Amino acid sequence: MEYFFKNIWPILKKDIVEVFAFIGIICSADELLKLFYQPEEKYEKIIVFSILLLGIIIIIIKNIPPKKYSFLIKNKDIKIKLVIGDLLKQNASIIVPTNSTFYTKMENDFISLKSVQGQVQNKYFKNNLNVLDVLIQKGLKNNKNYIKLKDRKDSKKNQYEIGTTVEINYKDRRFYFLADSNINADGQTVDPNLTNITDALSRVWQFISECAHVETLAIPLLGTGRMGITNSREEILKQIIFSFVANNNTKKIAEELIICIRKEDIKKYKINISTIVEYIDYVCKYQYDNYNI
Image (cartoon, rainbow, N blue to C red; front, side):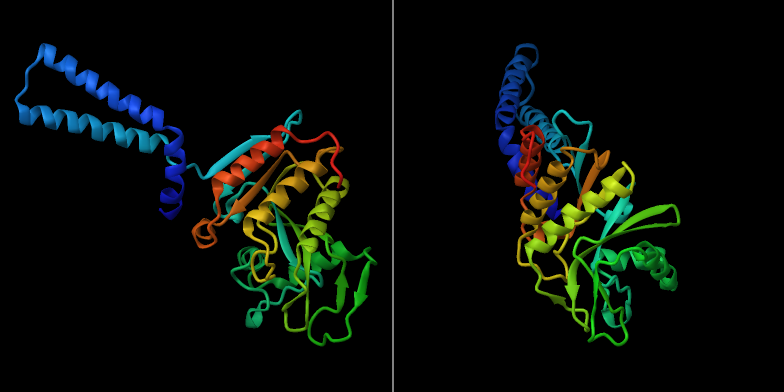
């Protein structure tokens, strides 16, 4: 409901001409009615009020802010979709942000149940995280780009580079676990910054284009949870959009990218959906032939 009231006015402002036109139609209809029928004054007011109320309801219903926005990248058969809703309900392969050690422990809220990783683990690997760990290690088997952490006793010791991606196929779902942050022994993010996000995005697109499948992908707003990055959600959204469009310039990464925003975040963090929609539309229509990536 908050999403509706926050976004209905900007849309109505664009249709203000339509509103006044409708009022004009009502006045004209009232005059025509009087030519053929002379109702009592009290009934005339009821009729006019009823028509006006019906018109307002129709205009509001017509302008209910959508929860899905779809865009086609210029000269490319690739879509970007902005969705207000649950990431895990999307019919797509899901990009799952994780830590650079790929640690999956959920005890003591090490991996928060509220995070995307926590939700994926709870829904698909509940009471069976060993399976996930085996699949992750299999995906990292030939990756030698890591350092050994000496301060880890009970957690994984190999810290991989930011942007390292592991493809996980399980229960008819595909996930891309993407390292976008470094953590200390207590699970707290070390030096959260926008560079980690941009590097992670660039490398996940590269991984998918070289090692994975051209399909529909779904991605959350990286770094906006417990990572503690100070950049706004709107800034992260723009980074995701720009990075995806730029990296599709030489090779098709996906049929469609679904960017998911949690409904409760819109009010809490004052996300201006209209601004984001305008930005996506602009980038998709006026993308440059060659980006400096």
